[in-house]
Amino acid sequence: MGGCAGSRRRLSDSEGEETDPAPRPPLLDRRDAHWKNAVGFWLLGLCNNFSYVVMLSAAHDILSHQRAPRNQSHVDPDPTLTPHNSSSRFDCNSVSTAAVLLADILPTLIIKLLAPLGLHLLPYSPRVLTSGICAAGSFILVAFSHSVGTSLCGVVLASISSGLGEVTFLSLTAFYPRAVISWWSSGTGGAGLLGALSYLGLTQAGLSPQHTLLSMLGIPALLLASYFLLLTSPGLQDPGGEEEADTAARQPLINSAAAESKPGSSSHLSLQERWTVFKGLLWYIVPLVLVYFAEYFINQGLFELLFFRNTFLSHAQQYRWYQMLYQAGVFASRSSLRCCRIHHTWALALLQCVNLAFLLADVWLNFLPSIYLVFLIILYEGLLGGAAYVNTFHNIALETSDEHREFAMATACISDTLGISLSGLLALPLHDFLCHLS
Image 1: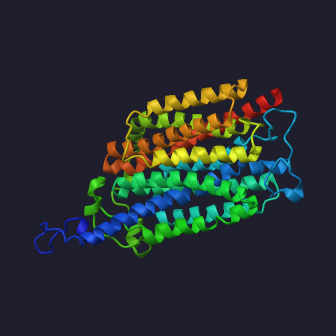
Image 2 (image 1 turned 180 degrees about the horizontal axis):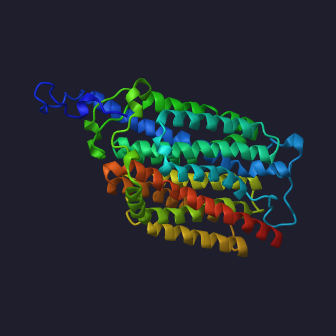
Image 3 (image 1 turned 60 degrees about the horizontal axis):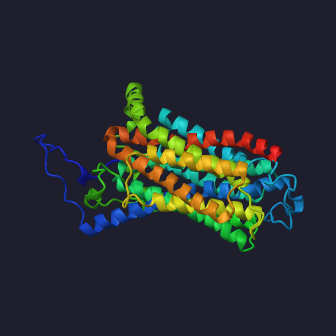
């Protein structure tokens, strides 16, 4: 991603002396580039996480293949079709929804572990194209699946898409003003809200899970259009947030071969430098791991067990509402960076662990009288998780040198995935224990 002529000084051919930079583009063009990049990164965040969120929202439906008759495998699990499991007060599936979580996160974990070791050396455009194709494939495979195993293969494709995209786009922010991190984070929060809400709304309206998933195939196309047609080509520029209006206007990425060269790339860093940067990141990585461990232990380990029989909502509908409210909280807090910045993310990790302990106690003792109290707690849980994500990456961007920023962003994004993976591994035996005990 080479810089344009106006972004650096040039040597005179005759005297070898520095000359003045080329004139900057008009202010209107610079503002146009700023808003293209802002909207572009918001849409990339939205589209990148959309399939991942939808698969988690559909987790209960995917696993209900095991209880629903074959000719009803794509019909919304409703009490009239799949009666509640009377042998358990939790109305358990035979497999925990954490199985879907693991299929949705373990490929992402592998990708993020490989990223600091050399994935960042690959050109950006092929990575983005691969991400879009995998996202489309995930919707198609799960929609037409007639078995849990095939559906989980579709979930794996969604995980590959999301993980590869997150590593790619977070690394890409190193070559743009820091403000795009806020737009990216807000977009990922929007993916959570719109993904969960669209799945909930369309299925509540009577659309089958199959047709609901097929209706979302436009999202991968929007991801590719946002990257190739909307983002402007980055150059050597001040990464500060307020100076972005002064950066030169650039052409869309698809029109610029310079988009694949990487000024200030971290590819030249030695192993010793990478280890030093990694150790410095631990102050931010460890709290984010704890935050995501706690919240996804709640989401995929406890949501299914927080079942209220005395409501008008079926078990599947309750699960979808939990997912939607959680994602609403995430969206609000991931969009709040301009209003509220938090340096000590350890406090957020502590509060999220308190949430986990409280809801785990309720699953065991069943003392909460109303589902609406659970709704409020889940909304609060989402607020904590989103705030931890956006503030962690913003703090890293502020405190990392230009030459280390690309590597630091790609490395730190392992935090949420590691926490989620650990939570899924522990949620599976918890599900089996509680369902056999009750």
